[in-house]
Image (cartoon, rainbow, N blue to C red; front, top):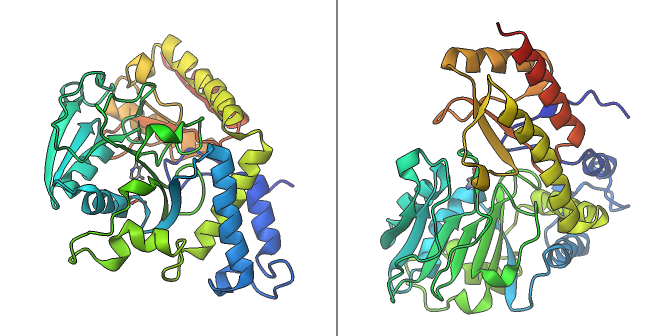
Length: 362
Ligand SMILES: *Cc1c(COP(=O)(O)O)cnc(C)c1O
C-alpha cells in the first residue's frame, strides 16, 4: 500500500515501522473479536493482561534480560525517570553523573532536588561534541550509582564503551538508542528509556531494574507512584497504565524479533548511519558536529557554514518531502534522527538531496 508517508527525521516522537502501524490499524475497531479497541479496554481484562505479559516476555527475549531484573512500564515518559532514579536510588544521598549534553544536564538538575550530585566527567569544554574518558572516574565510596545518558539525542554522541563505575551500579538513559543494538543488561543496575524515540508512542518509559535496587525502605514522603517497588509488585498494573503505549510497544518488540533481533538492527543501523556520515565526511558544505569515534548511529547533527544556510537547507528539505531536519533549538544546525524504523531508502534519499543541494552552491 502507498500511504503517501513522509521520511520523518524527527528526534521523537518518531517513525514507527509501517508494518506495525498497519497491524494496529487493522485492530483498532475490534481487537481480535473483543468488540472493542485496546484504547477502550479494561486494563484488568484478560485480553489486556495477555498484551502486557507478551510485551514483557518479548522484550526479555529481545534483550536477553536476566531473571534477577524486573521490567516496568511507567507513565510520564523520560522526564519522570530523572526524578524516580534519584528518589529511589539515593540511599546514601550521592549520585555520580557524567555530563555529556542536554539530557544528562536535565537528569543532573532533577537529581539535585533529592540529594548530592557529583559530576565525575564532562564534555562541556567542547560543547558536548564528544564522550569523555570514563575508564578511571573518581567515584566516592559512598556513591549510590553512576549515571549516564548513553545516547545524547540533541548533541548526537553515544558510548561505545561503558564507564568503569568501580563497582557501583550503572544507571543509563537509553531513550534514543533503546533496542538499536545488542545490550548486555547485566552491565547495568538500571536501564530506562522513554519509548517515543525508538519504539512507540509518547508518554511511557520502560525501566529494567536489578531486583536488589528495588527498595522497601524509601522515605514515606516518596509518592506511591514514584516508587519502583509499587510498579514491580503490581507488574506495572498498580493503577491504569498507558495501555495503548504498552500495546504498540509490544507490537514493535514482536516486529524486531521477526526482523532478526538486536544484532540485525545494529547491522542495519550501522549501514544506514555510514551512508550519512560518509557523505558528511567528504562534503565541503556540510560538517558533522561530533568527534568521529563518539558519533551516534541514531541522531546525526550537522551544520552548514552559516545559520542562514542551515535554515535555507531545512526549508528546501521540507519542500522536497523530508520532515523535521531542523536541529534542536538549543544547538541549531540540522539533525537527522535515523532510528530503527527509518528505512535505508530514507537515508539514501536524504543524502541524494543534500548532495544535489551542495552541488548547486557556487
Ligand atoms: C526525549 C528524551 C528524554 C525525555 O523524554 P520525555 O518523554 O519527553 O520526558 C530523556 N532523555 C533522552 C535521552 C531523550 O532523548
